[in-house]
Image (cartoon, rainbow, N blue to C red; front, side):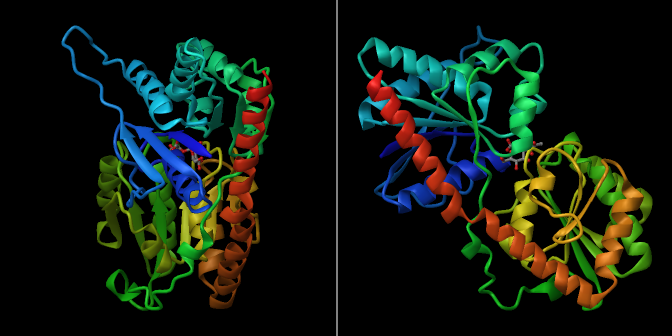
Length: 378
Ligand code: GMT
């Protein structure tokens, strides 16, 4: 199949999932066309059947806001025609589903029919999309998609609660390439980051308010009061600077390393003992799954789709949002006992196997085939 994938090319989970999906589909013989404004960060290699087409928005001084949706829909029209793309899979409703619908209508005028599959990722529904300024357009583009998927049951329920949706929503959970996290590098270079007696705690995110970064720091503060520990903070975003200031204020700056964005998540997780994800809301929590696949237990909030990924008392623990003391207590419970830590690590790895990409990617293939068939009948 020739599949066009539209996504955000940045370090966010939706872009990562879209990129990994495209790469796996290409291995399964499909021709993949990524269409976005810069090369997706995890898309390192282009090949015969993996292509990248850049959407450029010419700057014009009259516009206070440059019209990205317009440029994207025009690019989609051109690419569908040029590469005979059969299905467009757009990740993140805003503005991708909207632009894809416009492209579809333009193509129809020329007798070309291309179905649109929209995958909802979370903030496009729970934070941004439900804002009254966007809601009518988001509702419209979801309803006009030929197939809609969401990355968790919880996100499906949120979508049905927040929008007037007339389409079926298929839950296709996020997935992971387990082989990537097999740690074939036997020495994780742990000694570079911490002393032998120190436990390594990790947080990875885009450092936005929703991630509750101050909670991450405060939980770590409580942990390091009781046991020797270091905190790895991976990612970039508006909450990074305040987080650095909070560490200074608490006198723990020498125990916290801020990495910025990294393409070596697997290596960082390789030497981690515990992962913190105390988010306000989270449709899935891909970073938690990546941690679990690396054998790192997760201390998280009990919100959105996280309980579908992190199993309470088995792969880690879930607490109410902002329950810093409870999360600290649970973290120490795991970290203080070596045998227990080893058990939780093994459990985390075991749970992550449910999200093996070999199980999940065929679900997307089935959806493409189904929508294509329906499109041909119409
Ligand atoms: O978490 C973010 O702010 C980034 C966002 C994105 O669109 O990349 O992540 C969302 O999609 C991920 C991939 O499906 C999910 O794992 C995240 O849970 C979800 N984030 C939120 O719901 C806050």
